[in-house]
Length: 492
Image (cartoon, rainbow, N blue to C red; front, side):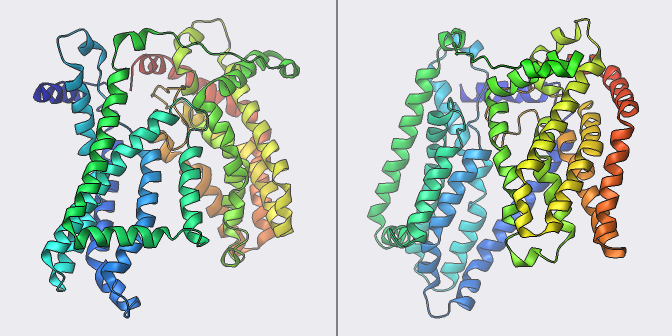
C-alpha cells in the first residue's frame, strides 16, 4: 500500500501543470539546500576545534550540549514557519477500501524523511566523528548521536501538534513566539537555567544509555498523538461541512469619495479584513513600522547612510510590497467571475494603486517618531515614501501581470510561500536593491542632499506620468487576462 501511495504522489507531482513552470524555483531551492548542507558540514567538522580554541579550559562536549538549548528552540520556531505537514489528496481514497490508519501512517512516515530532519545530521554525524577521533568513548558518542536523532524527530512531530492547535486561530504564529520568548527569557535572566538543564540531561543520557528510553517514549507519545489528531480529521464528511463564520460589517462609505473605483476598494478592504492570510498580513504591518528599530539604535549603522533608503523603502512600503506582489492573485478564487463582468480593467487596477499609495502615506505618518534618530532619517523616509508612490507602485503592479499561481486565503501569512513564484523572488531587485544602490551611489559621489533629491524627483516623475504608466500596465494585464484565468482555475 505504501508503494502505491508513493506511485500516486509521483504521478501527481510530475503531471501537474505547474511542474515545468516551477523548474526555475525548484533549481533555486536545490541550490539553497546544498548551501545549507555545506554550512552544516562546516559546523559539524569545525565545532570541536572551535570550542577548544575559544574555551580552552572547558570540556567542549559539555559546552556544546549546553548550547543545544538555543538550537532546539530555534529549530522549533523555524519549523513552525517553514515546515508543513506533508499531505496527499485523500478525498478519492476515502471512498475506497483503504484503511484510514494506513493513510495516516504514510503521511506521518513521510514527514520523518523531511529535509528538515536530514539537515541536522550533516552537523551531528561529523561532530560525533570528531569526538570519537579526539578520544571520547565511542559508546557514549553513539548514544548521544542517537539521542540527537530522536530529538530531531520529536521536534518534527511536536511542530505538527502546535500547528494543529493554532491552525484555526488568527495570528497563529504568536503562541510559538511567546513560548520560545519565555523559554529564552527564563534562561537569559537566570530565572531558570535552561542551558544547564538541557546540557545536563543530554550528558546524563550519553553516560547512562538506559535513559535513552525517555526520549524514545516522548517520541512515541508525539507520534501517537499526531496519529490520533489526523485520524479524527480523516473523514469525507469533514470536507463537506460548510464553515459558518460571522461576518462583521464595517462602514466603508468613506470610499465613495474615490468615485468609480470605490466598489473595488470596498472589495479589497473586505477581502483584507475577512480572510486569514490577508488579515495576518495587515497585522504584520507592525513589523514593517518597527523595522528601523533593528538598525537605527546600533552605532555601526549610523555611518551607513545608504541603508537609510532601504529601511525607508521597506518601512513605508511594507503593505505595498506584501499586498502588491500578489496582485491579482488575491482575487484568484473568483477571478474568472470578475473578468466576466462589464467592468473597466483600469478601474480595477487603479483601486489597487490608491490602496497601496494610502498605505505608504499612513506608514510614513506613523513612522515620524523616527526623527528621534536624526533629521536625516526622517527626510529619507519622506523621500522613500514619495519613491514608493511614484515608482514602486507601478513596478509591483507591472510584476503582478506575471502572476500565475492561485492563493489560498485561509492560510496564515507568516512564512507562507503558497502562491509564490519566480516573480515574487525577482521583484525585490527593482523594489529594494535599485533605489538603495542609486541612493548610495549619489550619496557617495555628490552628497546626502543630492541622493534625497534623486529619490524625490524619480517619485514625482512617476506620479506625473501615472496615467500613461497605468495605460501600459492595463494593456499588459489585458494581454495576460486569459492566461491568468486558466492558471487560477488550477490548484498549485
